Amino acid sequence: MELRQAIAQRYAAKHFDGRPIPEEKVLELLEQIRWAPSGLNIQPWRVKVVSAEALKRELSVATYDEPQIMSCSHLLVFCADTDFRRLSERLMTRMEAEGVPPEVRAIVGSIAADMGNMPSEAWAAYAVANTYLPAFLAQLVAKDLGFDSCMMSHFKSDEYARILGLPGHLVPAILCPLGYADDVPLPKWRYSVQELLIP
Ligand SMILES: Cc1cc2nc3c(=O)[nH]c(=O)nc-3n(C[C@H](O)[C@H](O)[C@H](O)COP(=O)(O)O)c2cc1C
Image (cartoon, rainbow, N blue to C red; front, side, top):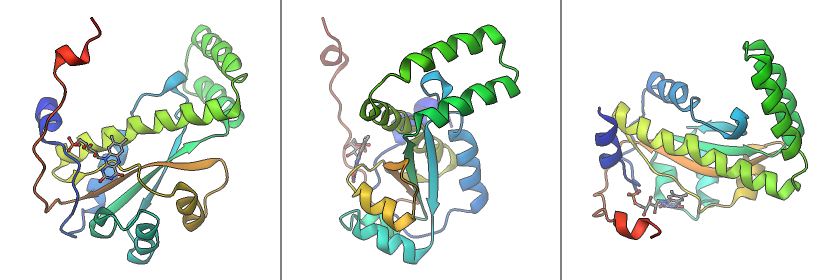
Protein backbone atom coordinates (compact mmCIF):
# COMPACT_ATOMS: atom_id res chain seq x y z
CA MET A 1 0.00 0.00 0.00
CA GLU A 2 1.19 3.50 -0.83
CA LEU A 3 1.86 5.74 2.16
CA ARG A 4 -0.75 8.21 0.89
CA GLN A 5 -3.36 5.44 0.71
CA ALA A 6 -2.58 4.40 4.28
CA ILE A 7 -2.91 8.04 5.42
CA ALA A 8 -6.26 8.38 3.64
CA GLN A 9 -7.68 5.04 4.82
CA ARG A 10 -6.51 5.11 8.45
CA TYR A 11 -9.22 6.05 10.88
CA ALA A 12 -10.09 5.76 14.54
CA ALA A 13 -11.97 2.46 14.60
CA LYS A 14 -14.63 2.35 17.32
CA HIS A 15 -15.37 -1.37 17.14
CA PHE A 16 -13.58 -4.49 15.91
CA ASP A 17 -15.05 -7.82 14.83
CA GLY A 18 -13.08 -9.88 17.36
CA ARG A 19 -11.09 -11.91 14.81
CA PRO A 20 -7.53 -12.48 16.00
CA ILE A 21 -4.69 -10.88 14.05
CA PRO A 22 -2.03 -13.56 13.33
CA GLU A 23 0.88 -13.20 15.76
CA GLU A 24 3.37 -12.85 12.90
CA LYS A 25 1.51 -9.77 11.67
CA VAL A 26 1.61 -8.23 15.14
CA LEU A 27 5.35 -8.97 15.28
CA GLU A 28 5.78 -7.35 11.86
CA LEU A 29 4.00 -4.25 13.13
CA LEU A 30 6.24 -4.14 16.22
CA GLU A 31 9.30 -4.53 14.01
CA GLN A 32 8.18 -1.49 11.99
CA ILE A 33 7.19 0.79 14.85
CA ARG A 34 10.53 0.42 16.62
CA TRP A 35 11.89 2.64 13.83
CA ALA A 36 9.85 5.60 15.06
CA PRO A 37 11.97 8.69 15.69
CA SER A 38 12.51 10.22 19.14
CA GLY A 39 14.32 13.21 20.54
CA LEU A 40 18.05 12.35 20.85
CA ASN A 41 17.04 8.88 19.60
CA ILE A 42 16.56 8.12 23.29
CA GLN A 43 13.45 5.97 22.59
CA PRO A 44 11.73 6.70 25.91
CA TRP A 45 9.00 4.08 25.54
CA ARG A 46 8.05 0.51 26.23
CA VAL A 47 5.02 -1.31 24.88
CA LYS A 48 2.84 -3.83 26.66
CA VAL A 49 0.93 -6.10 24.27
CA VAL A 50 -2.32 -7.44 25.74
CA SER A 51 -4.49 -10.08 24.11
CA ALA A 52 -5.75 -12.18 27.06
CA GLU A 53 -9.51 -11.76 27.56
CA ALA A 54 -9.39 -11.54 31.35
CA LEU A 55 -6.76 -8.80 31.29
CA LYS A 56 -8.63 -6.90 28.57
CA ARG A 57 -11.76 -7.07 30.75
CA GLU A 58 -9.94 -5.41 33.65
CA LEU A 59 -8.41 -2.79 31.37
CA SER A 60 -11.77 -2.13 29.69
CA VAL A 61 -13.14 -0.88 33.02
CA ALA A 62 -10.17 1.51 33.24
CA THR A 63 -11.02 2.70 29.70
CA TYR A 64 -14.59 3.71 30.59
CA ASP A 65 -15.79 0.55 28.81
CA GLU A 66 -15.02 2.00 25.39
CA PRO A 67 -15.86 -0.87 23.01
CA GLN A 68 -12.44 -1.01 21.32
CA ILE A 69 -10.79 -2.73 24.30
CA MET A 70 -12.96 -5.84 24.48
CA SER A 71 -13.45 -6.16 20.72
CA CYS A 72 -9.82 -5.70 19.64
CA SER A 73 -7.44 -8.53 18.88
CA HIS A 74 -4.38 -6.97 20.52
CA LEU A 75 -4.13 -3.90 22.70
CA LEU A 76 -0.85 -1.99 22.58
CA VAL A 77 -0.23 0.04 25.73
CA PHE A 78 2.48 2.59 24.96
CA CYS A 79 4.24 3.56 28.17
CA ALA A 80 6.50 6.57 28.61
CA ASP A 81 9.78 5.79 30.35
CA THR A 82 10.26 8.61 32.85
CA ASP A 83 13.67 7.50 34.19
CA PHE A 84 15.77 10.01 32.25
CA ARG A 85 19.05 9.23 34.02
CA ARG A 86 18.89 5.52 33.20
CA LEU A 87 17.72 6.22 29.64
CA SER A 88 20.58 8.61 28.95
CA GLU A 89 23.15 6.17 30.37
CA ARG A 90 21.67 3.42 28.22
CA LEU A 91 21.77 5.70 25.18
CA MET A 92 25.45 6.57 25.58
CA THR A 93 26.45 2.91 26.10
CA ARG A 94 24.37 1.68 23.22
CA MET A 95 25.51 4.35 20.77
CA GLU A 96 29.09 3.24 21.33
CA ALA A 97 28.16 -0.44 20.85
CA GLU A 98 26.29 0.48 17.64
CA GLY A 99 29.38 2.22 16.24
CA VAL A 100 28.01 5.78 16.36
CA PRO A 101 30.99 8.09 15.65
CA PRO A 102 32.55 9.74 18.74
CA GLU A 103 31.79 13.28 17.49
CA VAL A 104 28.08 12.43 17.22
CA ARG A 105 28.14 10.81 20.68
CA ALA A 106 29.77 13.93 22.09
CA ILE A 107 26.99 16.18 20.71
CA VAL A 108 24.24 13.87 21.94
CA GLY A 109 25.98 13.59 25.32
CA SER A 110 26.12 17.35 25.75
CA ILE A 111 22.43 17.79 24.81
CA ALA A 112 21.53 14.93 27.17
CA ALA A 113 23.51 16.65 29.94
CA ASP A 114 21.49 19.85 29.33
CA MET A 115 18.25 17.90 29.32
CA GLY A 116 19.26 16.29 32.61
CA ASN A 117 18.60 19.71 34.18
CA MET A 118 14.95 19.63 33.12
CA PRO A 119 12.45 19.29 35.98
CA SER A 120 11.30 15.67 36.16
CA GLU A 121 7.71 16.68 35.23
CA ALA A 122 9.00 18.36 32.06
CA TRP A 123 10.95 15.24 31.15
CA ALA A 124 7.89 13.04 31.79
CA ALA A 125 5.79 15.26 29.48
CA TYR A 126 8.52 15.06 26.82
CA ALA A 127 8.64 11.28 27.14
CA VAL A 128 4.84 11.05 26.83
CA ALA A 129 4.94 13.25 23.69
CA ASN A 130 7.53 10.89 22.18
CA THR A 131 5.34 7.79 22.76
CA TYR A 132 2.73 9.26 20.40
CA LEU A 133 5.15 8.76 17.50
CA PRO A 134 5.34 4.93 17.51
CA ALA A 135 1.63 4.87 18.38
CA PHE A 136 0.72 6.86 15.28
CA LEU A 137 3.14 4.81 13.21
CA ALA A 138 1.29 1.71 14.48
CA GLN A 139 -1.92 3.13 13.00
CA LEU A 140 -0.33 3.56 9.57
CA VAL A 141 1.48 0.19 9.62
CA ALA A 142 -1.73 -1.55 10.76
CA LYS A 143 -3.50 -0.17 7.70
CA ASP A 144 -0.62 -1.28 5.50
CA LEU A 145 -0.78 -4.80 6.98
CA GLY A 146 -4.55 -5.02 6.39
CA PHE A 147 -6.11 -4.27 9.75
CA ASP A 148 -7.35 -1.32 11.78
CA SER A 149 -6.61 0.56 14.95
CA CYS A 150 -7.43 3.52 17.15
CA MET A 151 -5.28 5.85 19.24
CA MET A 152 -6.82 6.34 22.68
CA SER A 153 -5.88 8.69 25.46
CA HIS A 154 -9.18 8.51 27.35
CA PHE A 155 -8.21 5.94 29.98
CA LYS A 156 -7.08 5.84 33.60
CA SER A 157 -3.30 5.67 33.40
CA ASP A 158 -2.85 4.91 37.13
CA GLU A 159 -5.28 2.02 36.90
CA TYR A 160 -3.50 0.64 33.85
CA ALA A 161 -0.17 0.78 35.69
CA ARG A 162 -1.67 -1.04 38.67
CA ILE A 163 -3.46 -3.74 36.61
CA LEU A 164 -0.37 -4.38 34.46
CA GLY A 165 1.97 -4.33 37.49
CA LEU A 166 4.25 -1.76 35.87
CA PRO A 167 7.28 -0.30 37.67
CA GLY A 168 6.87 3.35 38.71
CA HIS A 169 9.01 4.78 35.91
CA LEU A 170 6.74 3.36 33.17
CA VAL A 171 3.65 5.54 32.68
CA PRO A 172 0.87 4.30 30.37
CA ALA A 173 0.57 7.21 27.92
CA ILE A 174 -1.42 6.20 24.85
CA LEU A 175 -3.30 3.08 23.75
CA CYS A 176 -3.55 1.52 20.32
CA PRO A 177 -6.06 -1.34 20.05
CA LEU A 178 -5.62 -3.39 16.86
CA GLY A 179 -8.16 -5.50 15.02
CA TYR A 180 -10.40 -5.83 12.01
CA ALA A 181 -12.86 -2.94 12.16
CA ASP A 182 -16.56 -3.66 11.86
CA ASP A 183 -17.85 -0.13 12.29
CA VAL A 184 -18.65 2.48 9.64
CA PRO A 185 -15.99 5.20 9.61
CA LEU A 186 -17.29 8.68 10.37
CA PRO A 187 -16.94 11.10 7.45
CA LYS A 188 -13.46 12.62 7.63
CA TRP A 189 -12.91 16.34 7.87
CA ARG A 190 -9.93 18.55 8.74
CA TYR A 191 -9.16 22.26 8.74
CA SER A 192 -7.81 23.46 5.38
CA VAL A 193 -4.15 24.23 4.66
CA GLN A 194 -5.02 27.95 4.82
CA GLU A 195 -6.41 27.48 8.31
CA LEU A 196 -3.40 25.38 9.25
CA LEU A 197 -0.89 28.02 8.20
CA ILE A 198 -0.03 31.03 10.32
CA PRO A 199 0.07 33.98 7.89
C1 LIG B 1 -4.02 11.55 20.94
C2 LIG B 1 -5.32 10.94 20.55
C3 LIG B 1 -6.18 10.48 21.51
C4 LIG B 1 -7.40 9.88 21.16
N1 LIG B 1 -8.18 9.32 22.12
C5 LIG B 1 -9.29 8.64 21.76
C6 LIG B 1 -10.06 7.93 22.74
O1 LIG B 1 -9.73 7.92 23.93
N2 LIG B 1 -11.16 7.26 22.33
C7 LIG B 1 -11.54 7.23 21.01
O2 LIG B 1 -12.54 6.58 20.68
N3 LIG B 1 -10.81 7.88 20.04
C8 LIG B 1 -9.71 8.58 20.40
N4 LIG B 1 -8.96 9.21 19.44
C9 LIG B 1 -9.41 9.21 18.04
C10 LIG B 1 -9.82 10.62 17.57
O3 LIG B 1 -11.09 10.94 18.06
C11 LIG B 1 -9.77 10.64 16.05
O4 LIG B 1 -8.43 10.40 15.64
C12 LIG B 1 -10.23 11.97 15.45
O5 LIG B 1 -11.60 12.19 15.73
C13 LIG B 1 -10.04 12.02 13.94
O6 LIG B 1 -10.68 10.94 13.34
P1 LIG B 1 -9.89 9.86 12.44
O7 LIG B 1 -8.72 9.35 13.28
O8 LIG B 1 -10.89 8.77 12.20
O9 LIG B 1 -9.42 10.54 11.21
C14 LIG B 1 -7.75 9.80 19.79
C15 LIG B 1 -6.87 10.27 18.82
C16 LIG B 1 -5.67 10.81 19.18
C17 LIG B 1 -4.70 11.26 18.10
